[in-house]
Image (tube, rainbow, N blue to C red):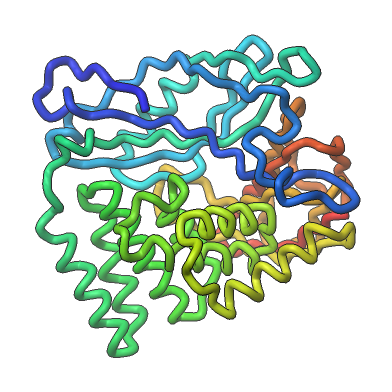
Length: 360
């Protein structure tokens, strides 16, 4: 956590931001790989990039509104520690947070990542989190609890669409991080009621930012458990197993539900084999004008193809240790990866476009 100098604004002088490097990546290994390696903090590196030098200030207008937020970026860190190709993947809170964070990251610098004793290029994912110091954070917004109660009442009546509508409208308001995370969990539950697990996954990822420790205490375990189930359903097994390990560390005595147990059994069977993995994908609307529709995936095998394309599946972004690639999608073309390194795949296209990802 790094302090921010906010030019003397009363609300802003107590604000802080958190810069998290998210390294829960799948590993392009074949054959079997151990869970400990999948969930290592910096797979394929002797040392990850660290010690950021970033000039980032808390937006005074958002501090005045008592608004917190976070933005998730894919970036590239060069061997000299400079940052390039900053791309906003997801965000909650004001668009100002994403704009300020993107500008600061693009001008930032890190101690470079090291592999084999030498600096290397790395594509990675970073969350920039804007929040008040806990001792100075204002109380909950008045409407926050009312919104959760109204959504719960709608679900109790079986009106899942109304629950989604209530929550969707309210997430655009100024909120604190724990309020946004808890409401995102409620949104994920509502989409599960609509049997729309892909949108439920989108929202449960928002609910479990920063390892699931942001949402209210009483929903954290449930949110992490649902996250395990949904990531496994999306064949994002690398993330599923890491989230499960987090869940067991935080709640070692909690019983494992049948759904989570089945998801982990499936996940471990895939991680410990070298069988092909085929995933049917639909690109979703992100719900914000500042976000590009895309699908993300932590790759598990040594190669992949994008095939059976329906609709506009335009391009992909591949971020690995020592490799960064941007290219148009060529259906059926096989892309080979270096063994033993972390790779994240982002596929960009129009909402509703579909394809199959084949990993081998």
